[in-house]
Image 1 (tube, rainbow, N blue to C red):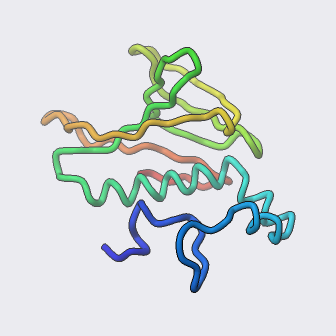
Image 2 (image 1 turned 180 degrees about the vertical axis):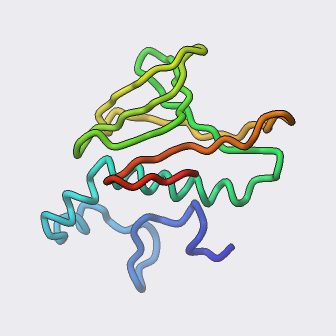
Image 3 (image 1 turned 90 degrees about the horizontal axis):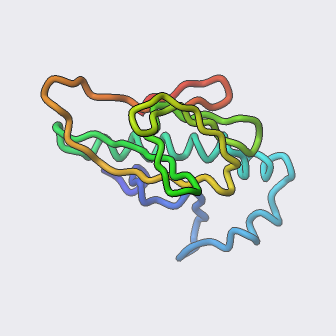
Length: 139
């Protein structure tokens, strides 16, 4: 896997720059339209989908990625699909304690836990759906 394909690669890279770029300096020089998109929940979801897809590629055949959306009360929703809800909110369809649920959160307070789990012999590999700007990405 090349360095550009790593889930650890920074989202922004600058030619000739070393270390982490100063995000405030970058945003201050960005046109408003580009800054607006960079800060959107859709961009967050798209980047998460790409990372999960790349992560899955490196997992053993008997493991798959899983995602939990963490709620402020400590509960965790198992994510089946994740989508943007306007510019700054995310909507999760998933399950909570065995029941189907929908969870909507502002992206600033949205936290996820990504982990791997063993695939049961009788179960097919499960994909997680990501919905951004009318596009569906399965990871």
